[in-house]
Amino acid sequence: MSSVFRDPTDMQELPSPSDSGEMTVARTDTLLRAQTHAWREHGLRISFVPTMGALHEGHLALVRRAREVADRVVVSIFVNPAQFDDDRDLVAYPRNPQRDATLLSAVGCHLLFLPPAETLYPEGHCTWVGLDGGPSTGLEGEHRPSHFRGVATVVAKLFNLVQPDIAIFGEKDAQQLAVIRQMVRDLHFPVEILSHPTIREEDGLAHSSRNARLDTQERRAAAVIHRALTRAGELIEQGERSAETIRQAVRQALHGDRRVRIDYVDVVDADSYEPLERLRGRVVVPVAVRLGDTRLIDNLRVEIDSPEKGGS
Amino acid sequence: MSSVFRDPTDMQELPSPSDSGEMTVARTDTLLRAQTHAWREHGLRISFVPTMGALHEGHLALVRRAREVADRVVVSIFVNPAQFDDDRDLVAYPRNPQRDATLLSAVGCHLLFLPPAETLYPEGHCTWVGLDGGPSTGLEGEHRPSHFRGVATVVAKLFNLVQPDIAIFGEKDAQQLAVIRQMVRDLHFPVEILSHPTIREEDGLAHSSRNARLDTQERRAAAVIHRALTRAGELIEQGERSAETIRQAVRQALHGDRRVRIDYVDVVDADSYEPLERLRGRVVVPVAVRLGDTRLIDNLRVEIDSPEKGGS
Image (tube, rainbow over all chains, first blue to last red; front, side, top):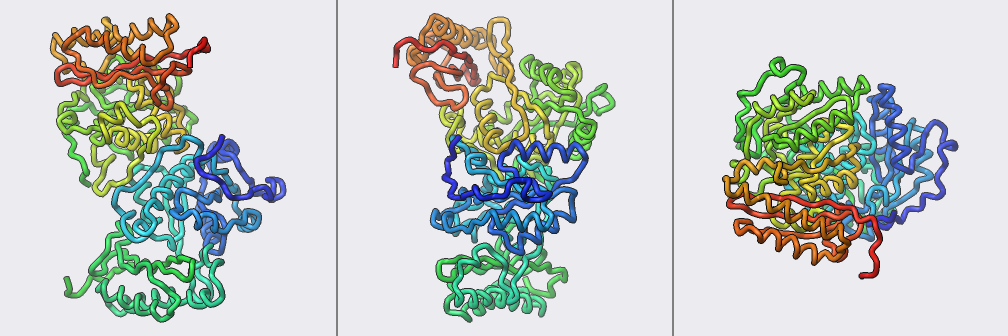
């Protein structure tokens, strides 16, 4: 069976299941289904963390949370070709399955699912799950046109393969989280979606597989993203409710480093991802910037619980 | 909660669960999930027959088959607005939930799921499942542009709500069957798809909810569809392997009644729905005709097991 996508990953050096302690490594859907079926038969609850590998502290925090909320944890590693708009980005995406498997085993993952591309996108594959509007509109949806169709489709496939009770996603990919929540609600997937706060390095930069591509100067400059979001948080804390004022303040702070080129800065509703004029309810301040050839995203997530005094 | 679609169905006169013997009538996803969850906990296998109501012998044959292959049978009745391209067709679609419930109870359906439109298409709904090419191309896909997107989306929702082990579809809607098989394969739905042969009236007309719309003369004329397909079957039996010869023979036979206007006649691969030049493997001869204001579809399904002698 061949795939509609080429798979540039070399999975040959992976540890066999017996090498990886208690963690099963399943490369086929047959083995995955056999294991998860046996767990369900025993009444065990399954949590699931889908990843694209190149694991960092952010992913490991999701896996630790997954262990807390269920009896068995499944992690998938699949660099999903359908969510890359740029083939160079796909090829350049870091891959280190050997190291990933060791890290996952150490934090107590029970099953690592490593499907080859032809399992998820076999020859003749033509079914897509996509959002027509809603939280897929604008921002990442505008800068990466087929990105969320690729995300929604692969998550639907993985949910049907793993059949987890709970799936956990990081809040760094805030728009992706909103898209997945919308898909789960609309298609009635029997999966509870949990989100986990962004894990940051010492200077505040959000952990990301893409950080490894930054050179020393870019890495130092990247700290300005979190400083800009922190500035937004301070303004909101002080009572600022104008989205435009927040946007301007974040842009101004990001301009503090000349290496940073802004893709977007916005203030949106956390669920619908509709741009706001006045801050209310659950709010996300998403930013995307470029540093050299590397594109980084981050966001501030706040809940406005005090009703606004005056204003529109 | 309101819906993106209006629901023209009056569900008020339905029997309550206690009136319908052993059959539970679930109008909410909560009751549906509670019942199916309890069955799964007891290790019972669930089969599922999705319908749009206006049940006839064809549907009841699916339900009887569903009883044979599983421990519990769920039938849904939902006139899916998203698969109608024409609002008049949606409004004119026959509805008789009281009669349907009585029929289903009599053939041993265990649970009838009757969701209101706002359950399946709540306000803000924006997620769609669709095929980009494959068996959704051409024929019904061409005559009813958004039809299969509506079908695939509602079947995905219902599969996630019911979580059946097996789902059963009629072979009369042959292209729909191919689309659903493709969707299940591509998205890895953990559901086995069974198909059931078309059930026919005495003169060979395929049972259809739309037959009730035919006047006496149209009803008599409609028998020509099955005669035309029978003629195709005879030719194939005699060794004819040219798709064009089969198409011409079916067209000629359909022209035997001047009331019949042909939408299409084709000869396609049963899985990919690609038009064939020479018959081989699993073949469908689908036809769609109009009789007055009513559109009827039917097909012949044959398996060519003898290798062709000579030819291209």
